[in-house]
Amino acid sequence: MMDSEELRAEIQRVIWYHTIPLPGGITTPGVDNTPSRLPKMRLPDVLSGRTVLDIGAWDGFFSFEAERRGADRVLATDSYCWNGDGWGTKAGFDLARRALNSTVEDQEIDVLDLSPQTVGVFDVVFFFGVLYHMKHPMLALERVFSVTGDYLIMSTFVDATSSRRPMMAFYPDAEANNDPTNWWGPNPPAVVAMLRAAGFSRVEIVDPPVPFWDRFERGLRRLRRGGSPLPELWQSAIVCHAWR
Ligand SMILES: C[S@@+](CC[C@H](N)C(=O)[O-])C[C@H]1O[C@@H](n2cnc3c(N)ncnc32)[C@H](O)[C@@H]1O
Image 1 (cartoon, rainbow, N blue to C red):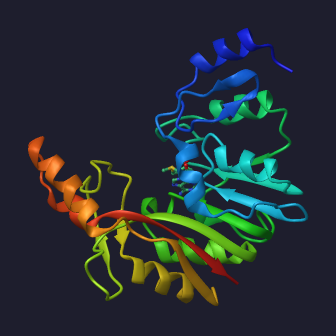
Image 2 (cartoon, rainbow, N blue to C red):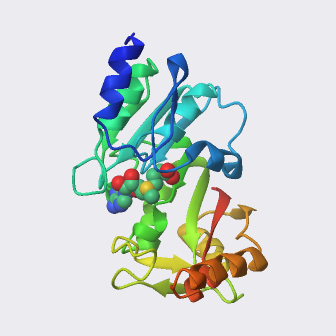
């Protein structure tokens, strides 16, 4: 086990995305308030007897949470951030795993390379915050389906939420959140239809887009800061569960 002083010093050397509670009352200083997102995912309270794959794990908050809930085996995968091309590195995952004395496994692999041959098949698959970064989202969902044994829990950014027809907004540049790695903003009916088209038999949205009037308020705040209120009006995030 690492002592607290050593851990605090090592934490300072990492650029963190996730906020991860570690032993000794220490929390990683992530830019993302990850614990606040956890209830929206509706993870099973108990994962004992289950294997879990966390795709796009980054610093590993959700992988460590699956282990904490008793999963028999957890594999964390990522590529963009872990291979140095992305916003962060794998240093946070490695340090948190050491600090937690965790046995979560890791594999650097692109979503499009996932298959039963490359990673195996897992009872429960997490796919959080990755879909809209994929240039080929339908292909990505087919790869994710191929490694899902029982069910998938997925969160994604959504756009065009005013329409009930399945559709996606395309961001050829940095139109979504000023981030050039965002390619597509599907609307909730498109997310459901795409998961069905990928092979899932049943899909449920467990966390819907924030209500229109909350988005309207956010848009007004953006307008007061001199920005365009329009993206805020139609964009949000959802969480789905999808069964094989
Ligand atoms: C917005 S972060 C989400 C991190 C974490 N899943 C969460 O919800 O907090 C997107 C993650 O997807 C990863 N990612 C993006 N494109 C990927 C790809 N083609 N293959 C594997 N991982 C990818 C990034 O490296 C990053 O860790």
